Image (cartoon, rainbow, N blue to C red; front, top):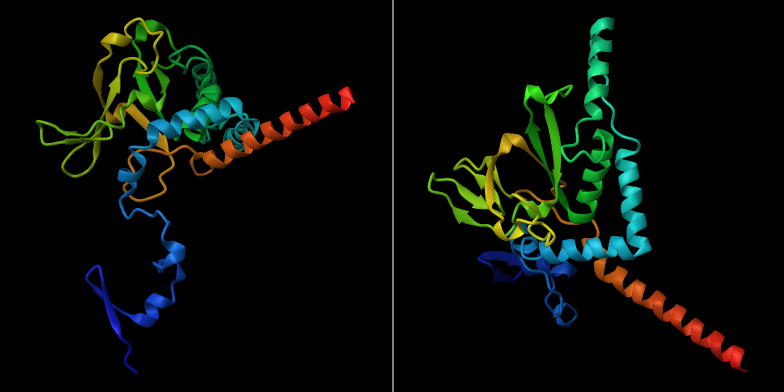
Length: 265
């Protein structure tokens, strides 16, 4: 049996196949359905600044959002992911474990927490802001560290997501990340200080520094192939959280007013 065909985007499709997918319909019910057919980076890059700011605001002020992120971090990290030496030589295994225990207390380049605290901080940043950067900071032997290496945890704003430009060496910068012609990450372009930190003394002279990719860990959860930057976990529910918060405030305010009238009567 022959079925009539129609042309859509250069393809000839049988009418019966088109009709079998209600989600592909373009009738009255789908007239207001906004579903842009573009790549993931074209969608999330312009929205990242607002998504991060609103996600952080929700976690700071909304108990539901705070509880969700806090539970996520607890489930991901717990008390800390602890490695164990696998060597069968007892003396060497004890030496490696002692060295690890010494380095754990010295791992933070900012000197605020230990390695397990950094794990929780990284997980919280990824869940709240969508991604986190960790810079490996080699140290001199004269600094008297157990291991001459420290980790610096950086907010996603340190790498500008709106930086797109070609390089003179043939590479290209996309969302602050430098790629070679083979599409391999070769460097990250980072600010010296947080670009949104108005309290920094040298914020007005902030410069971008090219940091080799082997010195940077870019931590985020990619959800589509080719994704460059991470999206906050709360992105799909931010509007609903705000509406729910406004609803709770309205109910509480109405109850307060009702109590005042009851006292007056």
